Image 1 (tube, rainbow, N blue to C red):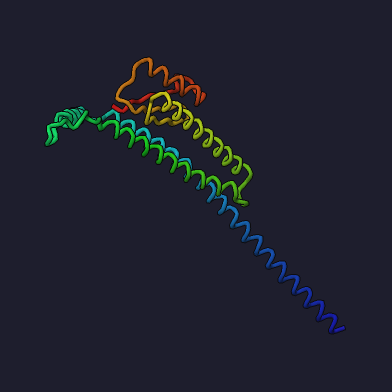
Image 2 (cartoon, rainbow, N blue to C red):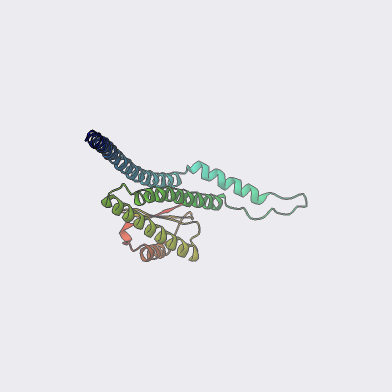
Length: 220
């Protein structure tokens, strides 16, 4: 009987220890889950802030283009004329001046597109972390998936518009789709009314946005 009693005591003690351990593990899991959800919320907020920063950077780039000093333009023009009149030792003309604005337009376009893709790549990685996280609520995952789909859709529309603009002769164009507008930067000093209408037609068809949403900026 004593042996049986001791055996029962051991079993009861073991069960008590297991219950304590299970309770501790549940408590730890409950403490960890809110932390992970809080981290996911912070990640989503970070993505939103990065998108805002990207839009502000694009707006700043447009401001830099439109506010290019007149004296600098005059300096570039004078330098181009000087280059055109320069002769080689054999007395031959160097050739027609190459407009530095063309090179600047190409550089700006490449830089803007690279920055855009870097921001999107970063946001995509953050969204995938949320989507693949087993500790995230289904509502947060659904929001992340919706954001991913919107981002992919915008990227495809921007690329389609840029390719068609280039095919129509508007090289170095950059199209940026925002919530309330579509910014189009054209790699030209000026455009005619006919060209403006052509750009608007292309962008409205490819982005499925209204003409009133389109803002065209030239590289003056």
